[in-house]
Image (cartoon, rainbow, N blue to C red):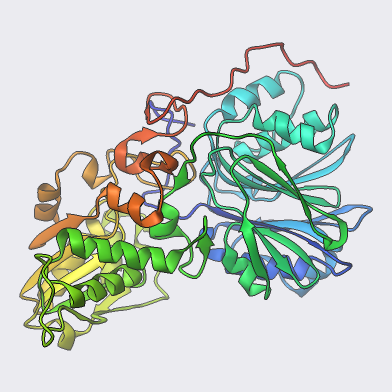
Length: 503
């Protein structure tokens, strides 16, 4: 179901997308390595988890709602036989919040068994679903992953694996990083603009595909490289290696900059950049652009920590005016002024506004000696609605802060994401219809500044056209109904020869 602009209704907030993984091993069961890798990717989705394996004769599957540690027990893992398999952790970005959309999605057909894990979001899933349903395909969910699975299964009836994948890639439009199992063959695919991350790793007895390199680290593996945009990677049997097929080549990419700002683990390497260092460098740029001389700079834990560290480092070198500091001037002190209660849920999934506001005080407790009687700069990665920021500023002032300045390590979020991030609608995004000064006034901060889009591109070593900046510019790298694009892009034309019913 969509609203007037084709937006899928979402929860009131911004949450991670999904995490995918796939392995092929030399004779060892894949279930436990997949289980450990999913733990490493748990931050990317907390609604459901699943694993599919294949033992050379049949496919085994266990998928359920909940966290990885709740979904699987020892008996579950023991039933997942086979040296090849894929896994998934999910936050629902397209489709219902129930087990029908939990992944990996599996389907059996004439050419074998198929499993599919998807990170991203298609913008033409409804068109393809209607076309396939018209020729007899029965769908059990409203998710876009099942659409990809059915389309690929149909193509596998007529083509070999590589050609079938290429044909499906020519029909689907949007962001996707996929791990797929076709019987005991595991493959990974990244959309032609590389919007979602996917990487290849080498472990002792095989190879792994994963959304983030942290999953490879968990298995004591070595990051080989990123899967290239438009590339198909097929893991060889028994973990012997992998084959690469560059199926689609685009002039420009559309890497999601928010992976580096918010979603990915700091210890992951995304598109050849260590996320932690990227965030520190974004913090340094934030000081260069809008530094303010205060007694202390503190992060909002844990999201603002790396930004605040880089900001404080840059402040030891230059003044807020850009002049070199005197030798006896240490700059702005970095301090932890807020302690996080890790047993409180995310504030933006509280059902009412009152509960969301109360949850801020449950979640964060100020350290009074760091704050009282001092001027404070507090750094975070984003402001979505402004509710949390308003409560945070008030919390610090109630604790005795003389001034509270807010700095954000990313540009203003002015538009929704259609590419797999669960984000508020335009009506709920505070920056969609307010200036920075109006937002400052709303949250009652003494000053407020965001990082510029150009600085984000500079830190990530990319041209702006090679990043997906839709949520901060309102212009998207995909053809989305009712939205502007930032490049010449059109969704595939499905209006050619009508599909024939399967035999």
